[in-house]
Image 1: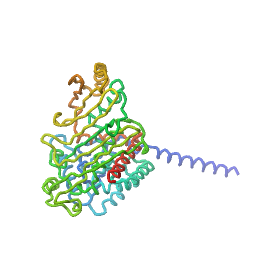
Image 2: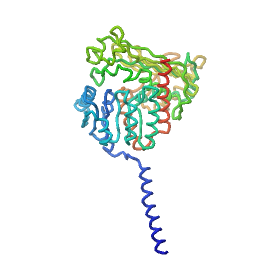
Image 3: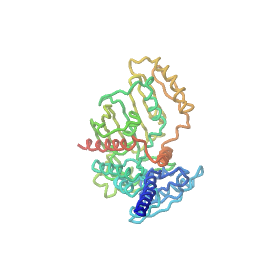
Image 4: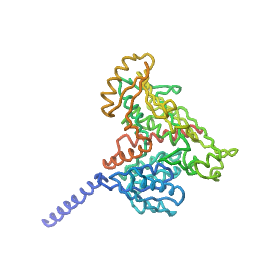
Length: 465
């Protein structure tokens, strides 16, 4: 009996020794922040944003990047952009791209396990499935927007977030507009009651928050004319504008109006939505794609030899009772000296915070502060004179308040904070690397990503009615 007791005790101790480390391993962070521990995989890159993630290098990221893609122009354009970064005169990168272009590229990526973070920016028709299968296989995923482009695929995205949590991997989308300095300052000021008051509720006709983004098919990226793939103009592959660029705008509404608040789908109430086309001639199409005729898969969108792309859209909705309107417009080409532009209004009980980026601002985003009717202008000016140098300038050194008129002010923002859209991709990547090291996203990020894509896909459904 004594020997039996000793054996049983030994078994119990052994079981405890083997089970505790296993539990601890599950709780350990996958990343420590060590140099080169993050190994990127680029999957089916068809959009130039995939390359912009690699415009900079990061100590935590290994220089060797595995690329899995179908053979064709998309992957060639991607590799050419990376080569351009590697060979530029100023601060060249040193990426080593290892490329696989077999027809089974996705299966090879899943089985090969050559990296631990998948970067996704390309054909959006396949993206949601790529995301789900990647997190199911245990990969972390950094995905360009949009993660989903149709209401029927939205449940698959929800499933992907559930699976990511189960597998302890981080699924995150690239929200570059959070890093634009005027947007950051608009958010900062909206959180200061002495200046902004509180956010208005608004109405459908006069929302509390309005955000409009104007984009262009023909543009310059990294110093070169952008060549777009023909599928970019097929909304079944790229997605309509109302579920594409508006992803950024819906994200900013949530991020600015309800910072750090966990949102849910029930907080969204759609009011109205609409969509309309941008019309492209064969000459316009040839300029941006290099193709001298519309491909067969676009023929259903061609009327009288004009390609009609549903790239424009607007969603009017309420979020936790606050009226917001987001809209995207695609033009063919920007005016001389111009580019993509952003217009944004946040209406407070004391002042309105307005970002304008038109010709009068030399197409540079500029934040204006304007008192609402009935407010004491001298009191507002006094508060701004305290807040800008003592609160905001402490965080953004060199920031200054500029009075333009009796009822309008702006902020003089140092050039160091005006890094430009392309640099925002590195800022997003650096934030994501920190999350990987932390082993988690902020508590609100995943539920709010779900709410964001619920808003855009339901907006599309409403616009099509």
